[in-house]
Image (cartoon, rainbow, N blue to C red; front, side, top):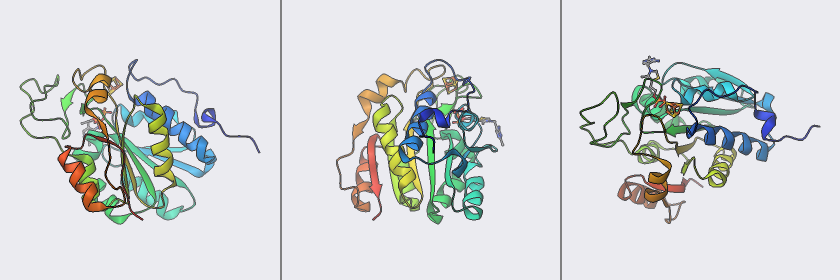
Length: 249
Ligand SMILES: Cc1ncc(C[n+]2csc(CCOP(=O)(O)OP(=O)(O)O)c2C)c(N)n1
Ligand code: SF4
């Protein structure tokens, strides 16, 4: 049997993401995590939504499906239901999963199928050139939102915890080793696993940069088996925590 390495999950297509985009780190981390788990590519299905982040499915060597905007999860759920032996990943942007796809996100967490859902959060709509997303904080000015967002941003981890996700984690795409390990744990978790990655858009977002992530994200220190503790610290930190935030026993 050939040994699996990161390259085993590389389809050989050159990504079209801007130089420095955080999504490169996510692609690399997914490939490394799959290699660490030694899951053969023919036993993996990766489904993405639409957005810059949605291109990730085209770069992975596995069965992949580039679905419609906000619809990665229902496609992933259907695949898992009919092919339970597959390792199923769903991937997309914060707009994909928390604007048009929010209903699917919450219900997928509630249904707790064994799927790993990874969001690449750049706090805006990258593909359509920088409009605010539901995760953009109040006051955020994007190219398509020049008068600033007038609403508070959603706390993604808090929503997923409340909806019943069994595994919730957050990471920065700039910290590769931690990201690989969290994705590895999420895929290995036997239930719905959510990993939110702060993945900077270097072209349209001059606020949520790699430096912003280093300054503002702190490692979670609560008991990750205690849902009440997780809800409290994720709420009080406004979601700016990294590491495993909750793991249902
Ligand atoms: C049904 C539908 N509505 C709107 C669009 C236009 N659209 C394409 S990508 C996108 C948002 C992308 O933002 P996000 O999901 O955060 O991904 P990113 O590009 O930032 O990675 C939108 C609104 C679409 N493709 N399909
Ligand atoms: S526009 Fe932003 S999100 Fe899209 S590829 Fe470029 S840096 Fe990445």
